[in-house]
Amino acid sequence: MFRCKSIIYGKLNQSIVKRFFQENFKRFTEEEAAYNGVLLRVHDTENYDKEKFSTDLLKLLEVWKSSQKRSAFLQIPISMSHCISVAAKLGFEYHHATGNVAVLSSWLEEHTDSKIPSYSNHTVGVAGACYNELTSELLVVQDKGMYSKWWKFPGGYSNKGEFIKGETAIREIKEETGIIAEFKSVLSLRHLHNGLFDQSDIYFICRLLPITYDIKHCTDEIQDCRWIDLDTLLHMNDASQYVKLVCRLILDGKSCDFKNVDIVENEMVNWVLKKRMKLYHRPLN
Image 1 (tube, one colour):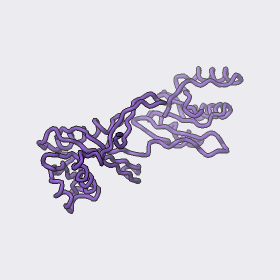
Image 2 (cartoon, one colour):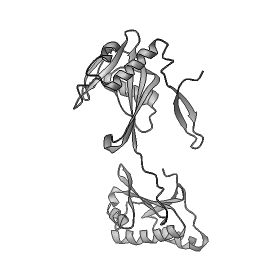
Image 3 (cartoon, helix red, strand yellow):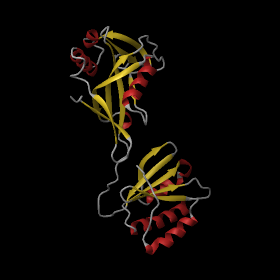
Image 4 (tube, helix red, strand yellow):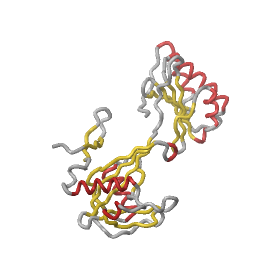
């Protein structure tokens, strides 16, 4: 969120601001944030008490508003958490927290609604429908815990920086079942709200082709793991409607080499961030 650079203020307060930051460089640093915002990184500093931080933050708010900054973010390490209550009294609220750092935000424009985007509000999960085309069997698991009666496809949450294709899907299958598999396509995705940590959730079902077949499932997470005939799974009471939908997709697809059901992956370079990205779409003729 913070692609930052140093701030340049107008001529009238440039020298005052420069001197202020020279005096306080050990306590915090200031950077420009997106959309005419500002980010203040509070450092882990001894003897920087609430009173001093309150005085400094009041001065900074005055400067930011006079410079027509639209938003302000405070990055506060857990060791300086006493500063959070001070910031809250001056109009800041929690935006997000990761690891040992909390980020607070405040919308500085008084006569407009806040345009500060919310932090990450979705989780991404990936499951693998690992289909043995020779035996017409699917690899399914029963999790340990409250939902242990249900047969489902092995899978889990995508880690930060992972792509769903060759990373999350294949990793989760290997970790949960011991099976090594090859990614073939995306078959389906599910979107729901109010999931884990009250986040919305997107869950991909990928079609995988097994390379190995001997099951060595993770006994910490998985109660049972089996290869089950596709037609049998389709009529089991302990298989969810979503699992049965994927079974029907595979049944429909296997007669024509899955050309009618596969969603393929395509890689491009993002034209703004210049980073590689994955696109998922129906195959092009």
